[in-house]
Image (cartoon, rainbow, N blue to C red; front, side, top):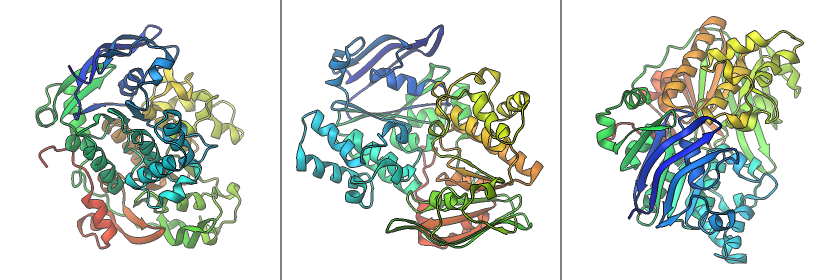
Length: 509
């Protein structure tokens, strides 16, 4: 008998089955990769396993854990299993963490409520787990609020929350999406270390992660299982066209040459820019230059200062020192001076107003400029990012992570900005949709001379998309070079470490 057995699982909203007759098994100490494009039903299946499906969902089929049927149990009965024996790492850490409670208190509460530890013991266990998942200053992060952590640091805190009870089954929904490659490697090594005792269901669109860390892989499309098998065999000889397309679309270092750098004038530069959070200096003496029609990638570990730097440039954070020059003008603290710059946030669903339909979210920047008849422009822009008119009336909670990111990108580029800042803008997207979005951005750049600041931990994507790359480490810029030169001959030790940690979608590698 397997530890977790799923037989004929379906999740139905009205007449639409977002998960359709899904069956699989998971043994103790085994890892199963659940992959598929955005909207394939992966997350809906995971939520159903945890008893967390939306109240409007009709969940059918049989879910058995350690011989016990979970389907149909009450919340009280499920709570005896959830968190302690089956735990889940959610896709969006900013939404999963309570913004009003310090991170450490949230994790300690899990141990206290399940009577696994109390008082000082609970605090010590949480701090030890925060350190184990790679947070450099665990005692400081214990007392931090979620908004005080970077996206990657929040994701590590979420992983710590799931692991602190030492569960039998860990369901990890895109657990490394927000992490840089070096911390991703640390987290995956941690999950490997737990494998003797913990079964892992790893949900991801990153085939490089699956190829190196899962014995078996299950591929979903349109809510259905289309292929399942040994990971190595499935990746090297996929039998289903959908699997073949996913493998072909997976980014690989060296697969796409870097574009040549344009020889144009600067549209944006910073000089000696500092950003402080109290006594902590997040960015120190940053020098950045962005040319017209150029894509400048900013890479580095989580917490290296990438997002803090661009938020200071955009006026969303105050700079402690230095200057920002945009289109030849030195900028003050006014956001209005930055009208020609737009930002695609790292957490797409959190960045969309939950009470606004997609049509209104995308139209909002146009209406803010006094434009009235915008419906057709909204429809055209949604189509350019791969969404049809059916999405106009949807709310953010009705979108998958990838769909929400496409809406966020449509909203950002609909005003034809001079500078577009993409903060992990394609991190939540599967390979095929990622390629579509990058091609869209490239075409907009070619048509309009759009300049792009591209923050990413996906170095294979950076290599083929960016003209130049800037590497940050502990708040400092440590290397800047043309992309082709940097990937061929990295100079700084941090750059070499980042490149060495990139996972390969080839299980034979």
